[in-house]
Image 1 (cartoon, rainbow, N blue to C red):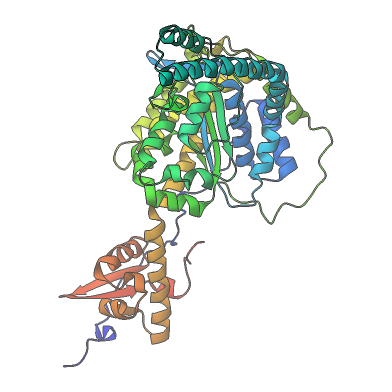
Image 2: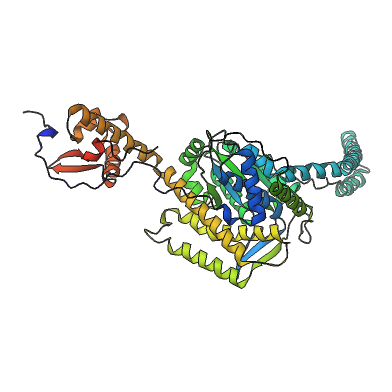
Length: 515
């Protein structure tokens, strides 16, 4: 019996639509809405971009991150009745090494780092006094313990009770270290961050241009990832966290703390993280809390130009950030490291804008809606917009007053851009493997048909000679379906046999695979 030859299948008249490109870029890049920043902030972002030649979105994220850190301890925001929350932001930029995020952050956080150094210098005398007081207390403590031990060993219990009472009284006199402001934590684990917030300073941040340290760290391993994602979610929410351990250093409560996170991660690191913990990262709402940005690289276009010696926009930004940092943080009664920020409210017309934004997003969460595939992110977008609006108000005014309609409109435009970036990125991450297999099959089909002088091939031939990753039927089905949906192939069934026919335009080089 002769072998089946796909070329022997009688030609079928097929009407072809134009083939679509194979690409993870299902959603188009949108221009960064720089105009959505209030003018003073916009000027600072422009100056940072002029100096670094980094992507403008990365510069905007840097300025927004610094503002979040400087303002989060001063104001919370009320979105509606019973809807209140922090103004802290989580921001994540996806960019390859060499995009100059470190330089961007150096400029955006210059005033914050300077303020941190000044606080450390001012506290140095107090820290020296604490060290002396602690050494004196420790000497008394050790002396009393030695006295009790000596009597117990000698069997002389007279006076032990008195020494024990003295030891207890001395324990109550144990000196406590003065709060040491730590605005930018170097801890790479959520537990370390919590300890810093509980014992050092209640308003802090993690700023990293190499977030592989975070996404690839042991704290994000399979055993601990759920617990640690939940911890970071609590920090974004401004919630309470109780850490109960036998070790006194690990026994603490975080209450009323505020935390900013601004990270840059390389695309392949994020892909690896999503393979390990993607379901948890999205299911827990961790990624949904981030303002995501995936800017186009500027590498190869950064021709050097000498910037002005005095950059007015950046200078004003540094001055305003310093002013905000110098405002005393509002503390809650009865807990020295629990914050109680002033509650900013939306003016009625600003509230109407927020409600319109919220409802417009909500209407697109339904099946086949624009945001159906990113419901997790979209559900946090209106919250993030209110946070940004509050920070804009704080930057241009004081912790008092109400948020204007203009600031709410600006913040809404920025939040929507980040939502669209999240949709674009998460589609890419979700379809990365499937599209790669479809692209491999597409390339093989084109080469095979050109070599054989035909426009078709039998499915069994693909399973015998095609790319190794799709030779099994269960692995071949999805790439075939993807190529059909893109009008690149048709599958003709004849009984149990299936023949794959290429769109003539694909064979002629139309709608090439996008990179």
